[in-house]
Amino acid sequence: MTVLYDIITKELQFYAISLESIGVNNYAWNKDHIDDVINFCYCNNIIILGGDVIERQNSHINLTYNNWFIKNDEDFNPESSCLYTKEYVYNIIEVSKNKDLYFEIIIRIA
Image (cartoon, helix red, strand yellow):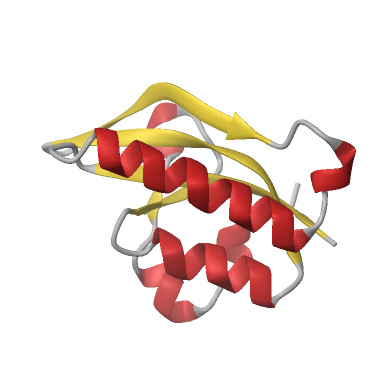
């Protein structure tokens, strides 16, 4: 599995948090930087297969068990997968305004 952190810009790597403490070999970005991450995927022909929503409380991170994934084969392209991801993420941010949320993204190189 390709991990987005390994191919993303150094600037965006700086804003990522590791999910190793919850047993996940990946990284997540908060609501202030997730749009830049999604745009990076779009501009670099990276398909977002889905992802998980993480909540940070004090110094602890926890899975919220909210997640998304691409359901249709026709959506397996960078444009539609990034659009679907943005819609999902923006909706979660809107309904969870007071929470410190992070978003893990699972990718496939197109």
